Length: 245
Image (tube, rainbow, N blue to C red; front, side, top):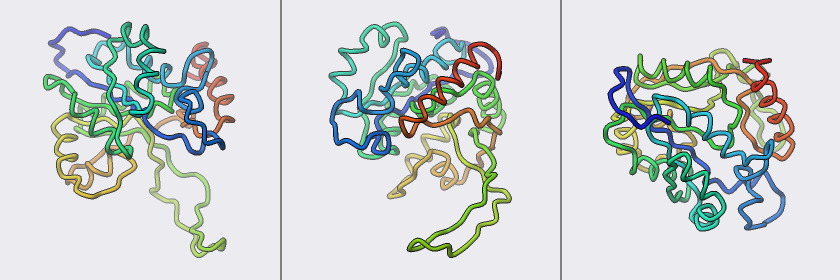
């Protein structure tokens, strides 16, 4: 990560969100951090580290922030001290919900950066090509996010029965990173009120700003269940061997 200033196209802070409870990842009620998906081993590295490293060597990224559950902070600092030091990683305590965790990360974003990217730690397979594209679009429009068009047939279900088939035309599935001009994202969070949002783009939309879609690859999967780790291993292997990218 280059810590020098002065790039005309703008500098980025990246907030990696890793404070989730991972309820769907494990059926146990274990409180051990290693039971959570972001700390699971993926090609001999924790999932979160793959995600952070995708941004670490970029010259336009000058600040890396990771948001961790307060319950895991002591363990995280002790177990990953070398990685934290190597990447100049700023570790922040998360909140009750994802939106609170991002807001905690925003509180320590450098004032001299132009853009803030928010990325889920559980998406370790995002490619350099995708990051390049969404960063480029954010520079142009001020707000951009990765997404994929919905290809399956979508049913609305109530009490186990289909009540509606939804027209999938113009429907997209949100991914991360989602990237915004710093002032836009700060404004959106200042106006959040009691909105319970699962992504930052919704808050930005609610604040009156347009968000551009950058088509993403379906390989930018989110680790949700243990079975997803095997697929992620294959994707990362192909990325590293330039088969997919």
